[in-house]
Every structure is written in structure tokens, then in C-alpha cells.
Image (cartoon, rainbow, N blue to C red; front, top):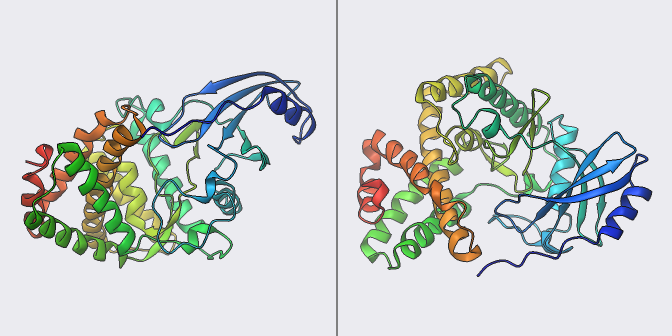
Length: 358
């Protein structure tokens, strides 16, 4: 079932808020819709007279109370009483992570008035990883990720929602099961044979257990080329509202095994080493060989979840924008499954039902 988008915000309300409530003297000149994402939120660019600033971005929730139900599965979380975007933005800003400034949150209307970070994503700036600037841009992204992992993780802040939820076995298995349901069964229109389901879930549970046992850091959860903005040669971070505690490999896998573009394998290896060396220099070393294996296993989990999510978005939200990325996403899974003898049972069982894994 397609989700119902809310009607556009009342221009008179927005104009009055801009004129009387924001921390600078400006007036609204124009409100134009921006391209959205796979969520139920909508975005508008506000052009202003009398700035700076000369523009803002207006985020509209699907309803003022919509934030109380996360669009992503969570595990171990307390009831949500504060907008996660605002809660986690506040924590990241205090940790000196480059997030947009929030100028005003109209709770009654479900509207957030945000700093405008422009339209240039990392994917655009790197020309989908074909630009000669790609290596330097991704080095910046890895350096920014190291800072996020170290500065946002310590000390723990019990007021931040991310510290109350984690990538534990139930959540990781929920995401694996999401792939089984949508990436296999609903995509093919037929149920898995019970014997294959048992094999697949048993092997997936081994991966989930290993990932859940890793030391945890503050995890963005969707750290990839479309959620990093390039503004004045600086990377800025978006879409962090589903952050939680997880293995250090998760965000790195999201960035380097990206469904939306393909990086050279040599560059990926360089960037993983760069991440590890930066952590070691900061006094937070990780064993290189062990991390490389965990990185590959994390990539399998993350990419299977993403492939299932793309089918879900097509079937449940009637949005066909993401289904084109399934082959690349499952291509990563196939290559990582082929690397390890211990994963042969999982690969064999999946290959019987997923053409891209054959």
C-alpha cells in the first residue's frame, strides 16, 4: 500500500514563522518542493529576502506525531517521546559532527526549519564514483566517519536515543528476515521451502551473532553517498535519525559497498586501511585481519537488508525508484559470499532462489 503524503504546508503559516520566529530578519519569497527520499517526509526549499541566509530547507513530517513510530526497525528502544532527528542532531552537534543547524521546530505543525546544505551529494560530486576527485572525496568521508565514531560514541549520553538501541541479534535477524520476506518470497511470488528457510536462517544467525558481539560505536546506520552533502569542499551529514549503537564496520560497509555506485576494489581496500590507521592513531586500534572479515560479513548483512528494502519500497510504497539498484547490491553479496569457505551453505541455499547469487 502506498503511503499517504501530507498536504503541503500552509504558505501563510510558513511565511509568518519565517518573519517572526527565526533567529534572523528575513521574509519568505518562495517555497518550492524538493525531491524526497524513501521516507514519508517531504522537503521544501524556502527562498528568503533580507538574508543571509538566503535559503532554508523545510522538513515536513508525515504528521506532527509521526516520529513516535520509527520507519526503521529498532531493538531495545524506550518509547520515543522526542523527535529522533532533533534528539540525535543535538548530540552530533555537541560532538562537533558536521550536521545542519536547526533554526526552529514547529512541533504543532510538524515542520523543521533547517540550514540549507545545497543539492550536491557525495554521489553527485564524485559523478557516481567516475570523477578523478573520487578518491579524495572518499578519503574525506572516511576521515569524517572516524571522527563521528570516536567523538559521538564517548562519553555515552543517556539522553541521546541512539545509546538506548543497538544492532543486537534480534534486530539483525529482523533485517535478514526482511530480505527473506521481500527479497526472496514476495519478489518471486512463492514461499521458501522450509528446509532452505531453516538453512538460510541458521547461517544468517551465525553472522548476526558475530556482528552483535563486536565492540559498539555510535552508528549512523545509513552513511552513504546520498546522505553526505558536499558544501564549500566540506562534507556534511544528513539522515541520521535512525542512529544506534553497532559495530564499527557497519557505517564503513554502507559507505564503501554502496547500492547507488561502485567503487574500485583497490580504493575500497585503501579506504578500509585508512579507517583503521586513523583509529589506531587516535588510540582506538582494531585488529586489521579480523576487521576485514567482519567488514565483509557486515556488507553481506547490510546489502541483503538493502535489497529487501528496495523490493519493499516498490511493493508497499508503490515507488519504483530503488528497484534498479538490486543487481548491484546483490552483486556485493555474491562476491563476499564467495570469499569464505564457511559461507558456502548460505550461498548455496540463497542461490537456489536469488538469480543474482547463482
